[in-house]
Image 1 (cartoon, rainbow, N blue to C red):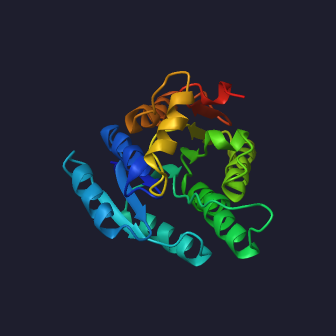
Image 2: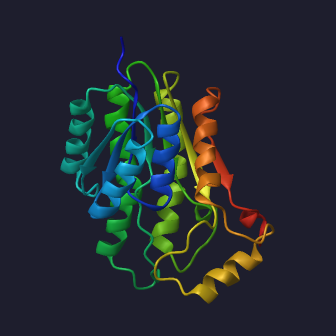
Length: 241
């Protein structure tokens, strides 16, 4: 009898990553929850998922380091479950000015937001011998010119392009798609009045809930005729000029 299928969620300790891990558990997947530094939040998330009756494993890694990406997938192998789903959710969103942004700061964003999903997809594909699903979490900002977040915006635009390339390269056995959220949770360093101003511009006049974004993952799990697509869930943000 085949072991319960495994889903790996990077950055799964909190925020949207936790929501993705929870919806996967509710769909019957054992969960490997990756985190970098949020140890307490990761353990709390693992306890919540375990309460659903699903196996859950924790693995710490700095995905900016290729060697630690390999160690993360060694944890996949140790779990004893066949890998069926990878959600690349780990990312950073630093601000910056394109005129003064340093090469080191640029590289730090690209290494985590773009190179790490590529390396994780390579590792996952080598294990998804009986098929699987890879979902990259991009951002509505991938299609905007966010001058305050140059490296982040470029990294997410690159991730959408990578999604399409991987979808062609890994078909037919592995489907690759992306989810592009709009406003969901404010960055920790964003003033409330600035967040409220952004939300007020939305056609739907409210941020998304984490569950509304995670439901897109459930849709991709169940509809097996979708690959190479980015699902934009932004409350109409992309309609704005």
